Image (cartoon, rainbow, N blue to C red; front, side, top):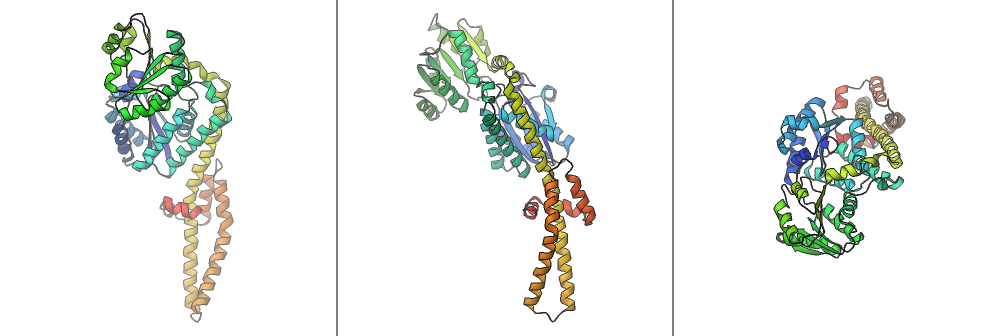
Length: 435
């Protein structure tokens, strides 16, 4: 059992590369399914967000699995190997666990402490469970990551270390166009980020919120939640001419707002500035709109520059300590899982000895009736169970220590257990044997 993560994020790759690597819908499903089908990979979970693409896997062979995952990434993203590999990071075992826990706490986010990543991790696990690619190990890992993230937000002020992408973007908006109270905002998209943007704008006092989405009904639901209005997607250009702010995050594969569209809107409103917040990856808005007069464009890269100093805040150090504690806890769980097959093999060996001796007793004392034989058998089994109870409980407790797996080796030596018999124990049998 080796936990491996291979991925790229805003920390290792420029937005141009992340934009090319972005996957949506069926693309995520296909990549995850292909990775999990590899011979050396037992389980897999794919975390795909606007600024990261990571594959977590439980693998048998490290180098072969890294090569296989890298190859799958090139096939599904369309990036050439030489364009992708300089930006990939690879962590395994404790470092992989630590990385996921940091991600869950928001320490690795573009905006430190943002809690939206927890929902994205939960969604990644749900997809893996739906596709059957997550088993015992990654289920436990991701569930603990979610607990660690919640603990960080409960026990520290990491939420204050950084603000949401939307809030940071709105700070930039007020610098560009002045107070946004009473202004008109056009939001393109109706996903979770767009809904967050709508709610944040409403709290900030924006006067009018318009939602444009390809699926009108979904846009209408978001609009209703903030007292806004929904429009058909083909009316986006018309609404743009009336807006003071444009926020776009659709997850579309190509541009949603082009330069000509923005230029046409600006000609209808001379002297009135427009602020554009593009939170999408790939970009929704043609980056050339920044060259238009009276237009200010802020994208994820600009936001990253604004929040870079948040990682020096004291709450970050508190969360780092929590992560270290939880990594040690998960390592203990891993060791207990590794010792479990030895415990199962020991009990199986004891059962074989009991069965053998009861057969011999039946041959020596044929006069015993069925009730007497059952009583003798139950007595022998109770004696064996009581003798094995303490050492099996203790070895499972001691297995959680850093040197715990060595206790399983001692147990195998003392009882002369066949290593192949131990390796043959399946996960369901392990669960039954250690309960």
